[in-house]
Amino acid sequence: MYAAKAADMRRIARSLSDDVYALVAELDDARRANFAGGTHGARHGSPLMNRALQHKFAALFGKRRGWRLSASGFPPVVLARHGVSARSSDPADGWPRAVADHPFFYRTDDRRAAAVAVHLYEASNQNRVAIRSWAAAHRLRVAFPTDFPSWWVPGGTTLCVYEPLLEAKAGRHE
Image 1 (cartoon, rainbow, N blue to C red):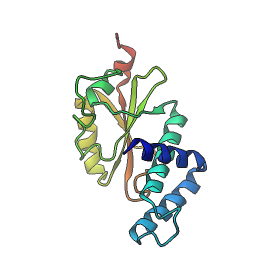
Image 2 (image 1 turned 135 degrees about the vertical axis):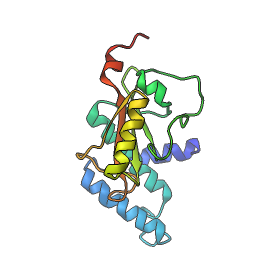
Image 3 (image 1 turned 90 degrees about the horizontal axis):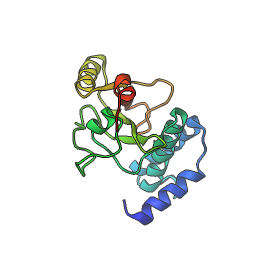
């Protein structure tokens, strides 16, 4: 996203309500307007509005957990060690779409990797076994929060959150 568009998106996000249920309704309206060709008015007919709503959701989700939304991503190895950076310049490195579709990255106040929230279309119980196995193999724990909706497609995607294993966080030496 261009810097000017990103600034517009953040400005719009700041103007939105902090009420999650109101945001779900706004996001539903925005998605409907995008699919209908923007017939629901300029406010909802914009892909920028979609992004602003998702950004607002993501920021609220992080704030409730003591994390801040990160402007940059990081690979699973950095999250596992609760690190700050990686040698790879591609944040998507190591995050297969099957376990990490539509990722949002979070950091602690000291800039360490805290979590990655993803939105999965296929998160059935059978798939969750594979997701948990992938997470364990990468020294991560995974949760499927029920106290907050997926903000990619509410009701159509499942929110999934990866964090470092507790022992990895406690034993870090950086």
